[in-house]
Image (cartoon, rainbow over all chains, first blue to last red; front, top):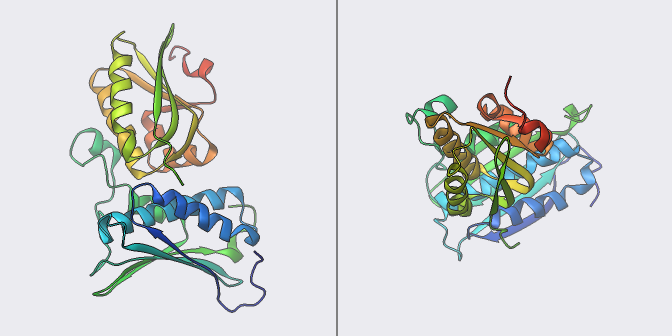
Length: 153
Length: 116
């Protein structure tokens, strides 16, 4: 796998994983292999893997309700400026994320549920996240700005 | 990719109880973590140490399980500390603020040292 040479957006891979618990790891490892040639730092790669895993888990759980016959589709694309990973499920309407900002002290006091970290983690791991949805699909797009990554951030 | 279900060993050391975690901390890990924590509490330790050296994956559900352990530790006035986290998971402990409540150490020796 080599980095795209032009500013045009190129699809690097289209992946599919069945909606079964644990398959988010398969998704993140396949995305990691796909982007090997892009020269991401170890730190950036680990952050991307966590974001992909969390978005895939959300798609399997809330979009496809862990029905194995419903795949999560992952498209990896890149230009000189950015890397995009689009993760789509077969749910309808806007993607379901816990919209409450996690507050650890509130969780420790029982005011918030201990869960609800997924969206927060995704947003913390990538430069930008776009969410879209229609009556047939949800898509979460994860974006890394490749041209702002001097110094291994 | 097969899920590496969490296995947890419990050791009693002079400075506290150590939970040796092996595998993935995800939604499948709850029973193993709960059982190990109950076992660790039997000796009434002041400190419970989470050894992450052989953990290669923690997801958001796993973070929630660690929050649950922390809540239990605080309710019984115990310190929960950790060592063996990779740089990536140290960063996640920082951004979630878990590291404000769970001190993260580089090794077991320092994790078991008495708090000053």
